[in-house]
Length: 402
Image (cartoon, rainbow, N blue to C red; front, side, top):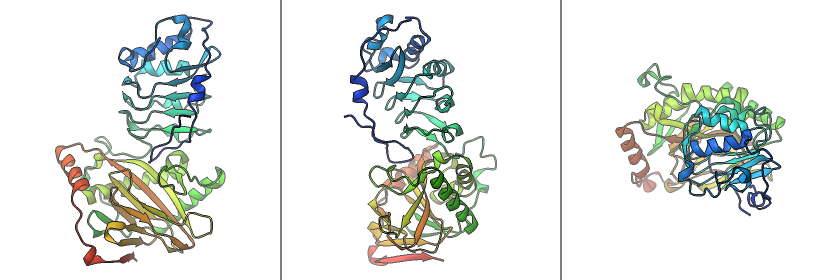
């Protein structure tokens, strides 16, 4: 069975058996050779560089046998699935002509796989419209060249996708600065309060969020889990966390997090790591729980993040243990409620075991897309700069920030 696994970062999904879908397709002819769906398929072929596709067997060869066109699965006389991943598709996904073509497939389309191509543009909001796409349960556009903010409709679908992968693009559900919304200039954007740097490229903001702001986030998260079947535990393939994906929560929780990103978190990260605000984009944002209760996740083993930058914000107190341990430096940073830890994602680190109570954190993976030559140089220095040998100076220690 061919399995599709969601990448590390802000995507949801589960293993899906595509092989059986394809192999069970019987060859059949469309009853109407000039159907709107056939015309839509021809438009998709033309708009996404069909003649240069790696696999294009039988496409446009015979109007009456398009059930034999490579990558299409039918249900009756209607298109059920398009599987065109890793196929050298090239074109702009939000081109109105292409958007209209996909809309014609909408009433019957259940699965769309177009990952690992060279598709540009933004992800059209119509794919989130359950009236236009009432049966669409799988949407995989990962590892293309898409860029922009995802429409809020993706987070507010009444029926969540069984599989929704946007990783490997510059798409985000979260607030992102650009030249038009950075009107006040980056020099005037502060936020986050004073900071300290206990290790190279590790920064701590002791007063990032207020206690009421933290309590609000935890309450919203718990309400979401109670209304939606509990916490998720399988989003991150390699290092699973008990969490909720902020991108799919929608409404107040997403809006509140976006407000914190805009006013505090992103401006502070830009200042600490000396990047332009427009260079930073949140790829994954999740609220996680670690619990000392038997059978619950209490810690996270050592790992690196799939991101250039990462942050962890403590959202409560009243627990014992916890914190972020930086393995190579034998150092644990254990901030109190409202404090944030910002660091390079390639640093080997772990989540320290919670031995009493529950610990809630807001964690984010941040991509850096340099907009200047200077930005590229800074990113290269950040990711490749040799580590300072400070183990003999710091030794085994824990930093508790009041």
